[in-house]
Image 1 (cartoon, rainbow, N blue to C red):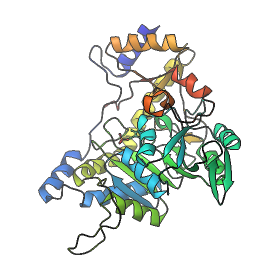
Image 2: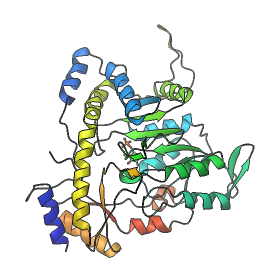
Image 3: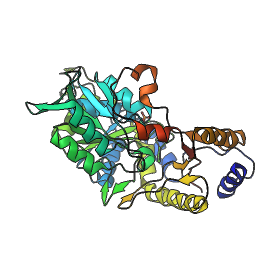
Length: 380
Ligand SMILES: *Cc1c(COP(=O)(O)O)cnc(C)c1O
């Protein structure tokens, strides 16, 4: 059965023998020209026209009022948490089924992660599991939520739109509002994914994106924060650029800031990539359509977008029967130079997050044993 899948993937990518990567970047537009512009202009670092243009493009395409460009998606999330008011000693709820950067950003913001289960169909944070967890573990005092077990403030919640499939974000926001918990969306994987007509990353107080080499579009390394809150946008930008107080020559800084601003070199490539986003998304959607048709009525399942949502189909997912079949599939595909990867090891199983509090994680564990990503690159 796996042999047949492998030859189908080879056929779809028109690659009879060579290695097929999981997700290769595609540079089909103005990348080189814009990159040369920055070099010719000498504005290669964090001040430059492309950084501003990139922020405008991100605001426009997500529908957020403001966007702030950062060096990568991990620090975008860290900055967003700090801007959201997360303080040392606070707790932040997220899903255990995520890329490690989500949990790391919480740690880097000096907070502690708490893991709550995902929905089986969206693979994103479950508003039901979240409501249950808070009902059992949280109390609201003085307009803030506190964890009854640890006594710590639950300051924020980070839902993540797994592989570009939108989580039930409106319901998540409604639960968090009830408990005065600020929502920061990790939309690193969901550029071009919508709930209704609204872009993922714009439902929470702040949302963050990544432009790493393996994402839907890339600028080598890069990230962005989006928000409708002018104060938060200004603050995030301020602390991302060493918190320098504007002055024609004096070096005055008013907090211990960061050097997290996206360089103009990267922004040039990011602008060229965003110009092609619609083309890239259409191409990826067509691939997902082929996979969906192929896997219909097969023993291997395929994950599709839910009604009322638009997924970007960043990484396509198949669902194997159990852990044993998953491992056999990974062996067979990778052994035949068709790159596939399992979904992540749950965060609560990693050394540095073993001590974190968890809700019931039945769905995360079920998915961990079964989900495998199959090749999802743009097909020229
Ligand atoms: C890629 C990714 C990040 C981090 O982005 P970088 O740009 O690689 O730092 C954060 N969260 C999730 C879910 C991601 O997939």
